[in-house]
Length: 170
Image (cartoon, rainbow, N blue to C red; front, side):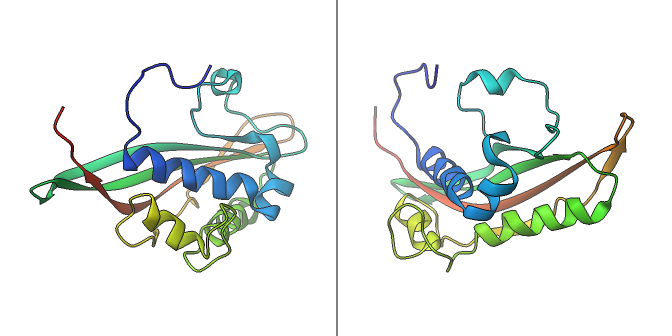
């Protein structure tokens, strides 16, 4: 289905979708998570239960902008937090910690761009991030083991970066 409102895309949306693109195209994330990387794109999988498959963990990204304020007369700045939920068919905390490390490595600012640019950080800055550097302020290593036949470990973390939105009169 995708986006239903006919509105201009904000820099917040551009930056969030660029992060999702980077993760979906990272070779290690693609190998480990595959199609189980979710980001509220308006597709059928968004409504599926949040549970890992037998062969792959599940990861869900949710944007959560906070602290918007004026940056200049024609621009606002905000902090874009991204909640990262993890689900892994395992009861070993190392799996949660290591999956978080894989996600962090895929988002290094000086890392290779999967969007055709020079580096991922420069790509982010080009679509509205203030610096292109992501701060991993709450790593996803607070696991919650759940009861299931094989055991499932869930974790949640968050990272953030600053976004500059140019404001156009309507």
